[in-house]
Amino acid sequence: MKAPVIHSGWALLGALLVVPAAWAATPDTDAQARYQQERAACVNGQSHQDRATCMREAGAALYEARRGQLDDRGADYQRNALQRCDALPAEDREACHARMTGQGHTEGSVEQGAILREYREIVPAESTQ
Image 1 (cartoon, rainbow, N blue to C red):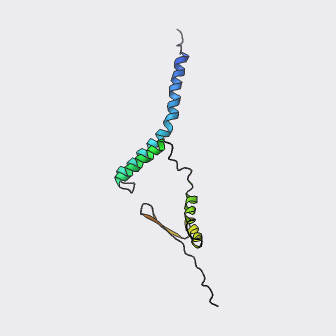
Image 2 (tube, rainbow, N blue to C red):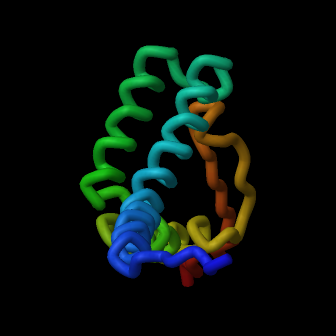
Image 3 (cartoon, one colour):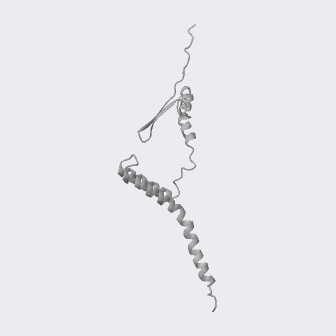
């Protein structure tokens, strides 16, 4: 009995069909999986948004992810927070930097509608002499 012969052309064709599918599926599969999670949060009311807004945002995020425009992995949130302080007058910047770096008292959340940061500094009164 002879061993079966595998034609190299068919084996090569099979390999060519499998490899690109694996390469192409990863980014879209990740984006689709994230979309499904976000959509489930919308449907279950866990997003802290009204359902229509939540669904619209989830769809927009999927669209941008497929275009390669949605990437917050490299975002530098601390730098962005400190840059907001630059718009303040010079005498207020130091206290703003202190609040943004975790000094003082912080309460609330985005889901609650606001994050309140309070920083108190005791400043001696100026001498009147």
